[in-house]
Amino acid sequence: MVRGPLGGYQAVVLAGGGASDKGLFPLIGLAAKALMPVANKPLLSYSLKLLSDAGLRHVFVVVNGEEAAAAVIAWLSFEHNAPGKMHCEVIKTPKDGGTADALRAVSSRITSKTLVCLSGDLITDLALNALVAVHKMSDATATVLLNKKKISPASGCSAGKAPKDVDYIGCDASNERLLFYASSPETLRDLRIPLEVVRRYGGITVSSEIMDAHLYVFDKSVLDLIDKHPAWASVRQDVLPFLTQQQLLLTPTQPDLSNVALPTSKSTTDIAGMSGTDGSSDLGALQYPGSNFSDWSHSGPVGPKQHDSALRVHIVQPGIYCARIADIASYGDVSRDLADSKTALSLTGLKPSALHENVVPTTTVLGNKSTISAACLIGEHCSIGDKSSIKRSVLGNNVRLGTNVKIVNSVLFDNVFIMDGSVISNSIVCEGVICKERSQLRDCQVSAGTVVASREYTGEVLGKPQAHDDGQQQHGCTKSEDQAVLVLGQRQCGLQL
Image (tube, rainbow, N blue to C red; front, side, top):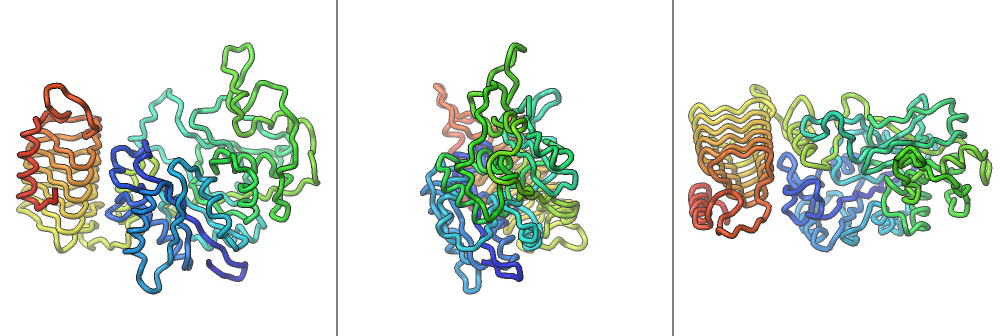
């Protein structure tokens, strides 16, 4: 707990689970997403550093699934076992549990009035104590951190196609109050805003250009509310929509709204879509968050006396780094950001060389005429062959590059061996991969332990198990050829295979 002039607060990290995260396949070969390497550090370490720097000495880490929890516990016992280090208590939840389930599992352990809740895949250098102070001074029930959406060239959202997993967030003119919140895996065609909210604040701006950063400051009353609604599974799709729907009735001292009944909608239209005779789908039966907005907005005040909104937002300002690793594209973007001294290298705790603005340990062996450009991060005990070049990339520990190898805008995990004449561009190569001579990867992801044949691959995921009647693996190598390459790799680069 952190104590200050405005009172203390506790923190919980929602670390997720294991390889069930399909958005990061095939990168999560480990038991836990939280331990996935990002700029050669476990992903979870960035969240824990944020909390430790804020002065916390005890945090809860909620992990989904027995296997993932065991892996996180083992890592924490090694990394956070020293005297004076922040104590991390792991709370295990079912493998398929949601974010609201995670908060419900830890709610009985929260004794402070204020709780900071953040996703384990968030990386930021935000001043956390300042955010909590603003939350307390506003007497808010919830404060949501928002970030401007960054469109990645690798995001896969083509022109003319609707985006996926969109947050629709409505704020007042001052961008201080959260007036509307809806999150949907699909694009919503119609949003219903409470008329009373518009009248109260003189207008509302709803945008999908800002996104939920998955860092929240909650009053303890929010946890009590979650406990009273066991069907809620998600903070984004259940808790926040409910709070915004009932915001004018909600204060931190009056959290129990379970008995407040809103008018029953007689319309078949809700925020998920428009129905009727225009040919669009009737999605009213799906009960998306905000389905009662239409009736509430025309029915006037309901229940107790209305208050000012107790929901606040904080939009990340320029100069503050804030990003989440939710998919392959964001993983690559964040990894390259963390390698760039002009962007976010400081979050890794590493310092670049003054001359070349990159991180190259003294254990690195550089061949004749090999080059490592700025914004590169090289792990320990790497070997770079003659005439090889690395540009804007991250290399893990014990990586071996042959002669005349080119690595551009890519991430290579530990113990990767790239043989002579190969080109790796805009790709992510997981641990223990061996690329044979003159192999070429462009916009690819390669799962751990894969042997890549001497050919060109573009936009492929390599290493996914496939059945072949001819005894060949999907890379075009026979089993005997693969075994020969594995032996060669073990002899040349000392891999533990």
